[in-house]
Length: 216
Image (cartoon, rainbow, N blue to C red):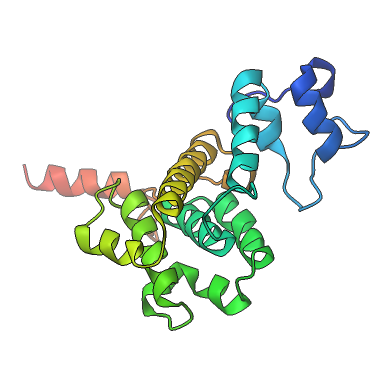
């Protein structure tokens, strides 16, 4: 479950209700969850806690896909899908894998995104976009001159700015989804202590205590 409460239809403000009607027609998304793409839909119901933040985020989605953009949709989705993978968001990666195919990327290219560096499925322009994305997300914006120079061989200044803004924004969304356990990022922590197996029923803590006492 998400870490914050969800806003039911009865409590939704007009701007939130408009999106509920589009995504969950005739349903309360809290009691009857699920979107047409198969997601639970709780990104929407949790963001609805603060309607102006909800509206700001939704407006951003339209901004990135606007026909006024100079950035090729294929390069946009390469950046956004890779950003989701690099930030470790199952939700962003999964949703934008689908969007990548809609933008014209092949199944082979989408499948290769997790290990794009070793794949021959991408053009020089694609690889420049992916390298730049990795340095925004994984290096926290510490973009090397060589990476930027390679990108500028293929993208206009307007397209570079649009890509930078989009990738940074979706790295933010990926982080939020993980922090609040939204959608497919409602995943238990994997990095936990694994008990030492033993035959007599004693725990690893008991064993370590015995070792410590024997050394006194």
